[in-house]
Image 1: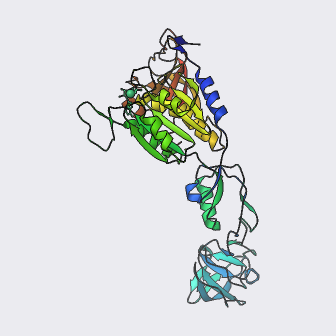
Image 2: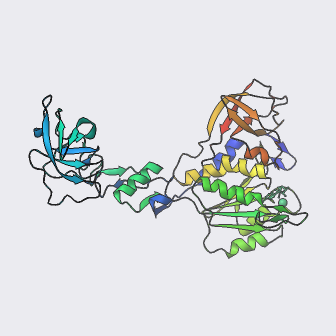
Image 3: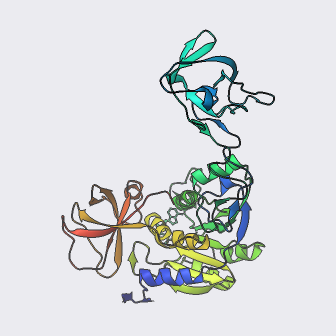
Length: 407
Ligand code: AMP
Ligand code: MG
């Protein structure tokens, strides 16, 4: 176990294990399917309708009686009517030796039991001629052949994907019970910070962590319940937390969690009654990462450095959120790839190196310091290097996580 003068650091695996052990109690919530993409279904969804909703033509052509058709010898049918999608076919009946012009999606009238496609007929003023036998049911989409009333449209425990939302739309399912995403509050801290929308003073900086976190949550379909910004002032965070009547399920804080004399976040959380789960992890960037819990609310204290915030989100917070939503927690895709240029491991901590992965090769990006954001904004992978004294050479196989940037 790595350590230094402020005490031992725990491993990444241990930190993740402690966090995931604390994540409990998924809540069910009824959501519009449109708001539920990525959520896990809490129960089977039973179909209230059938698809197709009525028997309809699968092609552009002519609705016919299959008994009127025959192979080889020419058949002549009178085109008695036209039916297009959206038309009513009440009181319409196809008689012997007649055909109805029909297009894809139009209802098939009584009497007709097949559709002969446009390409197979010759039009002759008001009639069609063809030399083809069409089987009963040919080119007709039968009512209910996709799904019937009472069938299971989607199974409990499955993740809602966009195609499923389309299915729910087709069936008129306006609300589904899902395992709710956690409510998350974001708190950024630092007396130097102004909103990215405001003009900073000469020695101020824009609060990029707020935007990074809001965007990262956005990829998971989550909007924070609030974002707040505090200066490094003793008492302010604790007072604020005490004023909240509805505690969110999780807080993500950034900054003020290190060892500086103005780093008050841990103290503030502790005076609010948060119990510490751990502080400081053997990783780079993100060493001062803190996790705590009070009642059902989890508190993640991320260091202020912008790259550390994003790394901690991908490794820990994303996993905690996914577990909360009933999903497999850690799903960053791990690969082995050939190193494109030399990479420097840390001597005592696991390093996450922002990198670009392409064609089985992974290239460390320029600018790996934890305050640097440009490299992250070009990264699609994080190389994971275990502690080592010597650099990893070009051509070596290394482990990396792919960041699909899609939640
Ligand atoms: P701290 O963890 O508070 O010691 O901050 C570490 C570094 O991150 C400092 O250079 C801070 O100015 C910077 N920092 C802290 N919070 C933010 C933030 N919300 N956005 C951008 N940079 C930040
Ligand atoms: Mg600070």
